[in-house]
Image (cartoon, rainbow, N blue to C red; front, top):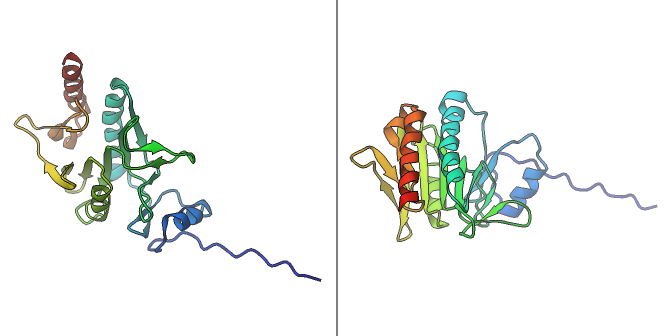
Length: 215
């Protein structure tokens, strides 16, 4: 009589695991209680519960800003916390992505984003966050053309644009506005956003969209 062997128990996904992308996805699928986990430079980061004021609320502001832009601009896709397959060691779930239909990023056969979206936005607590360091290096290396980090505790928005394979930080102009290089008409009134004045943020954005449509 042959005794059937039990299938091996798959280890659960845990913070700090060192995995390749295939194993990360296998364990992620087998760990349904984990709602958000990322693979950055081969290391697993399992997200902690998110507080409303420093993360969820500003996240909503960014979604509103980019959602209005996407709704007014053809051939643009926007997504919230999608899985992005960048390379064998990196599979982040950015807070928000914006990308062009027919651009670098595609929706693969599994329904995930493969390749680098043109714009990624992350909500970070402060400069100690891995969004400001490890993720920035990963996004730069994989060709994400613009990267925005809103450091909510520091009251700072960092907007980087890719030039010659290196991130250069963009600063607000004399009117306090940063204008996207990659997406025409995507304007951000930085001071208004930091003050949580979404009416002014959207007025500035709509001005950028209007000028684009007139040109």
